[in-house]
Length: 271
Image (tube, rainbow, N blue to C red):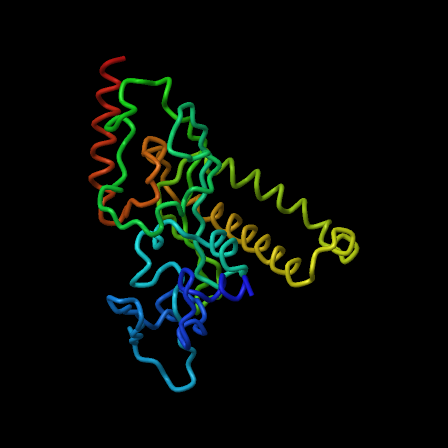
């Protein structure tokens, strides 16, 4: 009963018909918009593109028109954690490793905080550089950021090739993490046996879904490392605050790089 509500409800509300719609992202698949009434008692669903007879009607659990900042902070691993399935392509991965040296508002720095603001549309969440906010001038309180990665994975419908689009500037620390993680994940394959599952007492569906997530990570990191050979590196994301993943680099990147270069130029002059 819990999983039915967790996997199908809108927050804690089951809505007839609407809660039967499956999740799928991508322009070729996500084909509806949802318009809740002000009293939240009625949901109106409209098509956002032509839908052919017999074509499945999809909703999106993280890229919908009502998803707020979840659009930028909620990826494939979070989808698995919240709903219990590995989403089909396109997929999104948002990963970071941060060590904090100060008392904060509950962020433990383990990389799992990317969906904390998923329902917060406050415009004050615009990411700042650490040198522009409360950390300025106090290096003892600066977090140690080992890596930050954000990218989409999709399958080309013509070539069937797996393609990666980096949604944040790539830096060398991210490359090192993906290489090490890919080696670790590949080493786990020897444990994918019926004997291992039975010994651990894991239900078959849970076992299969877990290995599906494993496969998604392996495919994603393999494709990302291949695409990384064609990317320019920058450590700019290591200087951004906790909302780093909210930056739209297509529209805001030029301004962020300008401020970053001005700061680095000032630092070089000072030293």
